Length: 257
Ligand code: BEZ
Image (cartoon, rainbow, N blue to C red; front, side):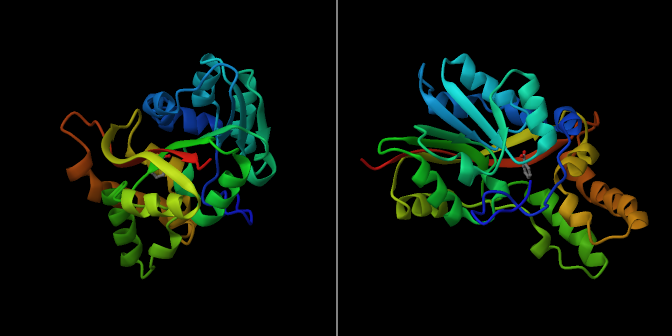
């Protein structure tokens, strides 16, 4: 993902590989069914799937009979989505967001300028248009973040400015939605401990590049091993199963008519 002035994507936070994402993070789409249910797509509705990634969730929207355009800024993920036969476009959300009725998205936690995002979404929706999403909420992956910050602190690096994510509380995000002219129908912060299909090293490779960027190539493997050593007692069970401490913020809002 890359940054644009709408704040829709997050500056070089991560390099996106479709193969790595499918291997380590397929659960993101697999666990997305509740938000599809909350969106309740209707046949013929036009949906803009912002940050559609490799299209695994976009396919579920199409199956419901909606007409979906998926948008993402990661070329490798867009190619994967197109290979599923989806209308998936490599572009930033500012250009995509026009004349569409309903918007759905899952990657809001990568967008560090939430007000700019909400301005863009509001512009894209007609009165009555729905904005439904689920993303990382307050306290998301807290143990993982603390371990990353601790390992960087050992090296004299303040990792807080390297954090590529926005994890608001339900109260904070409700207030933001209302300030931008949305009526909030439902908003919930949901603890969702998430068993990882591979392991924590795979999760770190997939999502935490920005924390390791200040380190030399030689030091990165050692730093990752230290993060794993800190996390193992709390996130890995006796069978070797890793579980990430996810908190999800799920909401449905409409543009006031
Ligand atoms: C996710 O998309 O699952 C995710 C990414 C970064 C931090 C937490 C969750």
